[in-house]
Image 1 (cartoon, rainbow over the protein chains, first blue to last red):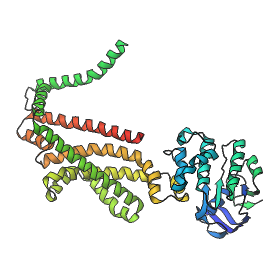
Image 2 (cartoon, rainbow over the protein chains, first blue to last red):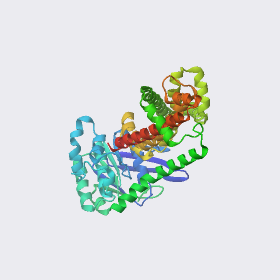
Image 3 (tube, rainbow over the protein chains, first blue to last red):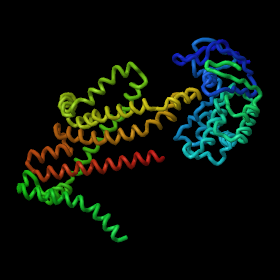
Length: 193
Length: 249
């Protein structure tokens, strides 16, 4: 169980997390849903160790062993799709690159640079890179934005087969339906509905 | 088709012909080769110089000095830019010094360096000193412009420092480095030759330029100036081609 207790974080005068508490399962695929700007991304960033809360505690997560998918694709314009995957893999796992490209349904696009990929393809590549990095927990911020429902469903099943716990945010009903747990949130400050 | 080709040829040929005509006309009006030799006299002087081994050796030595200056100035500029970007102390200590170097007239440097360094080494030292602030300025601007989102990604994805340098910093800095190097090359060339004129080493284009001036050989003075311009343009073109090729690969 991931235990979040009394998390507090402000951006200037705006309290995004105000003594926020929640228990999240540490297995399967967990979805966080809520309006844009309610604080979901901030919560994921705290779990990943990318944002430092002013107060509160998180237990059950080692930030150094999480893989975080940013809301933006953050692809390197000068690296090909295959290189993006290879860059996060240790040398002895470089042979897995074609499998990860297949996971993203980007077979045949290994030599393509980000500028040549559509928005959906770039998102899938970013997700594959994050999943290839791996760790004890995948934290995915809008992983299927711009990806069609059918493909998103297949990739979600692919994530499930990895066996790594996943916490994701999404607005897509079809994605939320396929997750094992769903938490509906509102804010700011972030609160459980 | 033919008309278009003719038009293109004219567009290329007319400007030099026009300016050579202006030059010849001005020389005829002045009427004294000592003050303004015509293009034919300069061409004759250039041909006479080109058959001597001294001419080619002087050009080669000047090239070597300028490239040596360009190389050390570039290396030092890049190194200082990284130091001042990543260390506040280094920035507080070194940034004002680099700015002073940038603001100091090249002639002051030549005369000062003349006191401290062997004459043969002065052009390379001066060329490097002129290159350093340009490269430092461009690289500093480039480092400040590296996408913070990519740097955050590198941290979150546990890239080592070396990997972050290779995958994020160096590709992001390529454009700033290229434009800095092209500007710096022109400066290195001009300041290097200026240093050769003021502190003439044994074999150097600048020394020959100075000797021609002292001997009142104005056509030779013009000929050496033409050599400097031609070499500068040719090498800048070569450098641009090399950088473009590097970027493609």
